[in-house]
Image 1 (cartoon, rainbow, N blue to C red):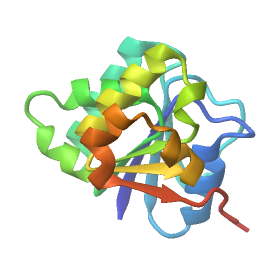
Image 2: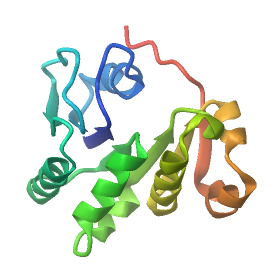
Image 3: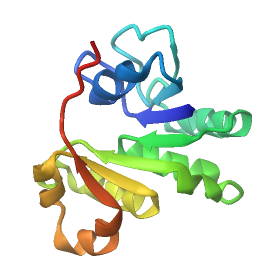
Length: 162
């Protein structure tokens, strides 16, 4: 399996890296693309790109990765990177939306309004939405649940990658 993972950054407390990527480093090919430069050294088995905080550079990286690879799954961990992914596949690669998974890592009420809006848009376009815990799932407003409830699944936090 070939996976593209999108997140804002990778640091020592990064759930997309520590809880999701490390546990599968030996199982399939992973490409991790982050908006900001990483604060830690990544495992050598995980392909990594970052745009050093540049939205335009991230967009270009995503366009190139999509053109050069046939990903089985695109796992999105932030509204910003999700929107950039949607823009990068528009209009000729929209079929990739059927391979997307969005993970909401927080409760809805702790997100800034901007991030709520971006996450909502990405959730609408994603094939599947996972929340980190039942409380995160329950925090999503009823209006948004009306659109995404059939494709939303809570998952238990924590993954022992050792």
